[in-house]
Amino acid sequence: MAKLNSLRDLYIHELQDLFDAENQLTKALPQMEQAASSEELKAAFREHLEVTQNQIQRLEQIFQGLDEEPGGEKCKAMQGLIAEAQDLLKEDAEPDVLDAALIGAAQRVEHYEMAGYGTARTFAQRLGEDEAASLLQETLEEEEMTDKKLTRIAEGQVNPQADQ
Image (cartoon, rainbow, N blue to C red; front, side, top):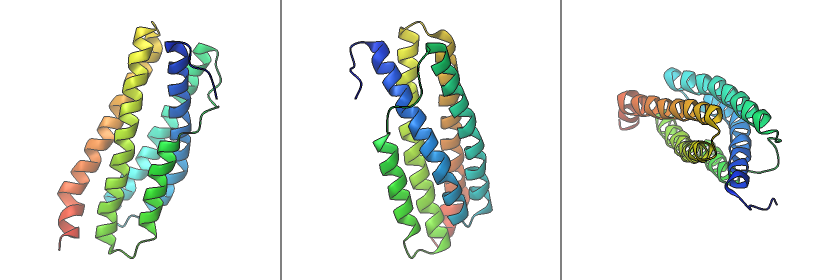
């Protein structure tokens, strides 16, 4: 466990946590896509996998600029969020109800990521890491767009069908 003696140490710790979280998510999203019945939801999960892979590349770029390694932290929060989503997949649920549950699980992931990226961006700004702050802001905006897309799918299609 790394010692956190400065804001820079905490910033690197946060980035490592996000890096692990995103890598865990790349393994979970294909499972969520496969379990979804809504074609729009399947497409959203597929698209977010591509976005997540780009976000990992951005994090790698930030680590390179800091001359630090991306590994070293295990994101236990993401591990728990994914475990909860996987538990949903084991439920005996109607397809539309399962889609609603998957959206809820995915939005919990998005909200966790938004909190993490917002924190990391603020640390980067404070540390004068302007390029990193810009990259982190770009990712934060993508996470917000994904959250809004999931809400649109839920409210416009999945939840009404699950309520029948």
